[in-house]
Amino acid sequence: MTKDWSADAQTMMADFNRDLQDEIAAMIPSMLETTEKAYARHLSEKELRDLLAWQTSETGKSVASKLPSITQEVIEAQLPLMKDMTPRIMRKMFERMCQRKACTPEQRDAMEKRLRT
Image (cartoon, rainbow, N blue to C red; front, side, top):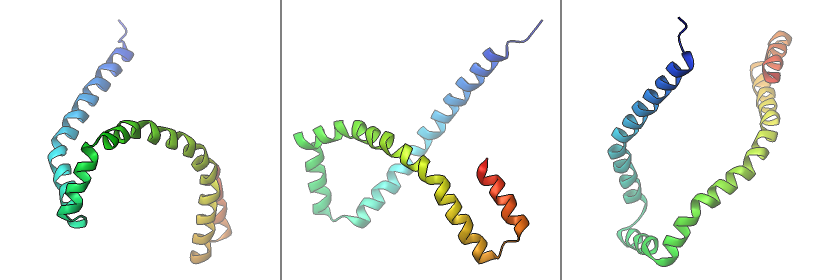
């Protein structure tokens, strides 16, 4: 008798996702508290009231409803740019590190190999 590993994997992933959701839900009160404190530290009561008024206005609600689409579009446009830039940035950081740490030729070769993978 063979064991159906794909069914086991699906069950495990479903359990994992349920547990993850429970853990995130448990964090929400703390996350809200830290957010509240940050807003209170940086905004005056008038600014908070104005922000709330804007968010509950027709324009605020309209903008809020469009933000997910705008954010998604921006991310989709930026991901290829970031992907293209990453190797160059990594190489630049590697060069700076090697200059500061006086890398040996062997260390440079090892890092070059890691950068290529």
